[in-house]
Length: 331
Image 1 (cartoon, rainbow, N blue to C red):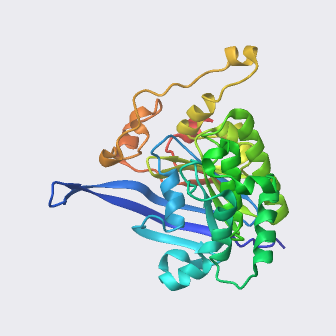
Image 2: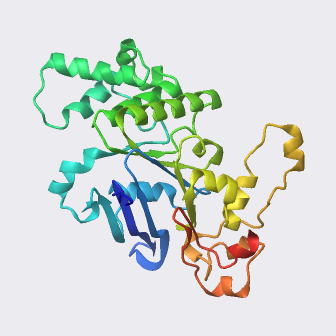
Image 3: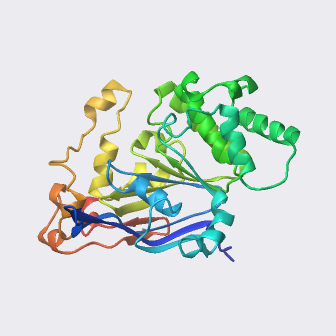
């Protein structure tokens, strides 16, 4: 008998619409559909990668889960409890369990506080009674966990390198003792060599602490090294979701195939033989989304049906779904 796995986090029909206003009276003249009917699940201890071009709704999805932006509709179930429906008082009790690591390791840290103070502030905000010795011990523990010496705690953000600042950001998130961490492009602002160190650190922390990640990125080569499952977004919608291995070996959506073809290959001879899919045009404005499939204006395989009807996510297997009318012809 197959054991049913209950996801630690489920997102169901999440929508985030922003009104488009004009003039001093702020007359509503339209709607920006930043996140449009997004659904996915994550098992405890796993990593879901969310990828796509800039403006596709990746970061807004993460912020909506944290209630940093207001959702229009949908559910975010953390251990079967709808986070979006909780009162502020009840949400305050569980919000420490879902944390975020931000893209900009400098802009997300208070420049007036030392690294020690940044971690300490988060640690004591849970309201638990601790003496100064216990607090000192815990702060130093988190510095060590992320690979920093205790002396680093005395420095201000401007005295740290980009990699060190991001490690402080990770330590700050860990100080809440979270179960789910949303990583919002945590390595995109770092040098390539430092990116590998941070990815390896995140994987080590996940293994040792049983953390669950939502890893937002535009670099598929980075996501490949950390994600178990990958969700591809375009103009606020999920166009394909599958296991990591399936994405690189059996992707079905034309947009996913185009993203994969853009990943640089180190081997010169393989790169020369490889077919690069170049998409025509730019990503449409979310203010004026095209009718039908949002990708059809740039899709080389689009038909009349694509311009009129919105494809729904269709299950191809237990671990693979795609929103495309013509994917069977592209296999």
